[in-house]
Image (tube, rainbow, N blue to C red; front, side):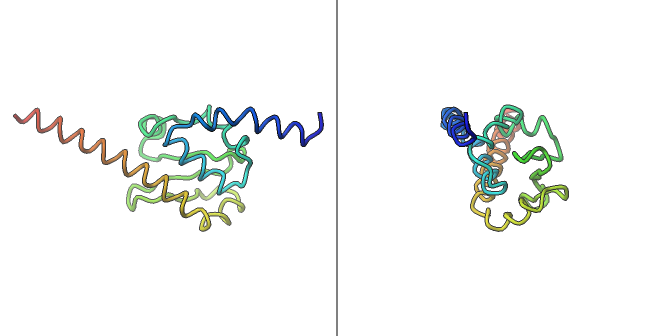
Length: 134
């Protein structure tokens, strides 16, 4: 099988996996594609190693949440609790850093997912506290 045929088959096999991504995974998938410029199949092939939800991400990485990109583990995207933004870690590849500004819409989508999840957790916490104080 030549390289083109292999790549086509790889992408075809990845499509159902990509179609089944939840909104959290989809946002990270789009950001990874924009930053690494990897094929959709290459990007999604790494997802079995990664958190499937915000809660799982927090449990895995705690106060220093990072997302590993599909470039072999060199590049990571971290979240700043201080200003609520994402940033590439210092060991991220030059390619990822060069694509950072152009990936603003995808970064904003991930940040919106994070903000939404934090808001949901905060509102649940308020409900619990209010019930305890009744």
